Structures are given as structure tokens and as C-alpha cells.
Image (tube, rainbow, N blue to C red; front, top):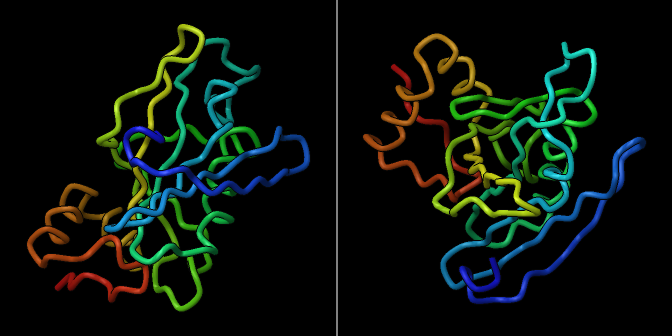
Length: 175
């Protein structure tokens, strides 16, 4: 990732009860700020309804981009990265997650839409680790996408030229 972004990351670490530390790497480039989790992929993601942890399930890390180096964003990303271990969440393309609080101060976005990243998967000890992209969404957008689908939401964003790097943006028009 250092080679991809061309800068050294800033690092933050958080520990939740029963979870190994999750690190958040922040890459500040001239165009954007990218936060990437590190540590979520230690264990395969296993659904909450499973009797035992999966020995070979999907492994992933999360990334979210913003404009302006949102310093508070690392905490929300750490919560999302701990969710597979704490709550049995298995992230997949098209999934929405609402945290119920702004991603950063002054933001209308309270959740994320999971999608594929432009970053290639990373091989760690012969195990493929996907880097999943998170796009910030408002609670209204999440509710609308549950009825119309996340692809329809993405089409609205594109059609209305929504700046997904602006975490304080207005919601997309849904009428």
C-alpha cells in the first residue's frame, strides 16, 4: 500500500475486549485521504449464526476514502473492522451498515456501502485478503437502497455527480 499511494501512512491502533488490536493506516495524498484497516483479516469472517469459527472463510480489510484527512474517521473504521469478530458480520459487495452516528463531526453520513476496491487482493501466508471499499452513506440512502437496491443508489450517485469523498455532503435526491 505504501507503494500504491506513494506515502508513508500514519497509524492508529484500537483494542476491543476479546479482539486482537486493529490498526488503521491513514494515507494522505494530494487528492484524498485513505484509511485502511489492518488486522481484521487475521481470522476468516464467520457469520453470527455459525456454531464455530470458519477455518477457511473470506478474509478482508476495509478502506474508506475522504477529502481532507478526516482524523475522526479511524475510530469508525476500527469499529467496522472489529464487527466480524465481535458480531459475526461477513462483509460482501452491496451490503450496507448503519453505525447510527455520524462518521465524522458534522456529517450526515452514518453508515457505509461495501463495494469492491480498485486495490488488488493481498496474499498473506497463501491466503487471499480482499481490500473492500466503503462509501459513506446517509441513513436515508440506506433505507432507500433496501427497497431499490444498492446498484440503483450507485446509479443515482453517478447521475447526480455526488462527491463520495465529501463526508459532509448532502444526501442524493431520491425522488
